[in-house]
Length: 342
Image 1 (cartoon, helix red, strand yellow):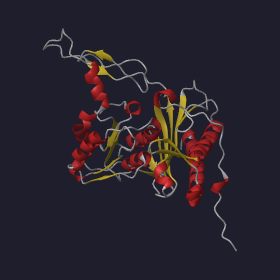
Image 2 (cartoon, rainbow, N blue to C red; image 1 turned 30 degrees about the vertical axis):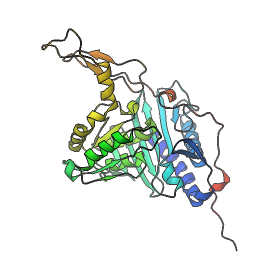
Image 3 (cartoon, helix red, strand yellow; image 1 turned 120 degrees about the vertical axis):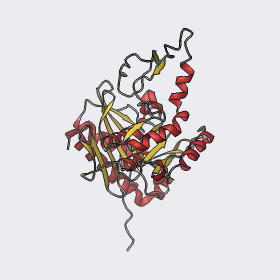
Image 4 (spheres, helix red, strand yellow; image 1 turned 120 degrees about the horizontal axis):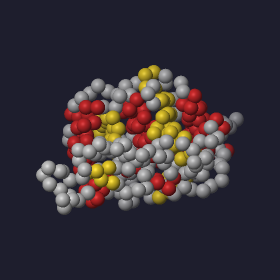
């Protein structure tokens, strides 16, 4: 196992211990609301702090992007950046539904190199290193061998925020549901992506996600032989927040169904009017999507010319969310299981 992946596994297991202890006394948890239907608990904060402590003890010069703390910790100028979701599936957790996970990814210059998704309720540890394959509890995993969408089980996530476009999602749901064997929505994207990598799902799609929801799971899938992109099949999913993942053959069929719903596609149409000088011999220019989190506008290049590679860079907290400044937290006493009387 790669040394950096080994550290990430240790951090994930530390967070898992905190989560499992807290699950014994869910009724005592203090829950805050970040936005409508978007919750954070003291467990999220304590688990994230535990992860950060382990990572920075081993690599003090690395950067951190956490769901709860943003880029408050770590070295912001580092080429290495840990992307952390300490408890993906918080709503499930606070309702006692055992579908949630710890997600940790390490990106080097914007490209994810190491990934861990840990399900503490089942003690399932999904890991991947770029170029070295994907594993579940040290056993090699591969995406499923299904090639027809009609035979496939697909995972998804439902919209839950106040201003989400429910009508558009329902149309996407309808298109996919009419073609596949079934749709599932457990409520934790990190687990959904890990299940695609393990062959339990044949595909997955969702919108409105953040980098910490997708980073680790996306590497698991590619190392397990699957494909990951946005609804249009492009690779800007960490920036756009929409993700589509599947086995290679099913992936293309899902793209055909969902590409018209891609926000990236809509941006292309808005910024890519046909040039006045375009002729039948020279098709209209096409949009090049910037690298992950690129602040500059998209640029155009005439069709047929070489397609330059996007410039990758580290994700900034300002790209995805406003960091919440807070003091270093420690696991509160509610994590101690109750002792029976007598």
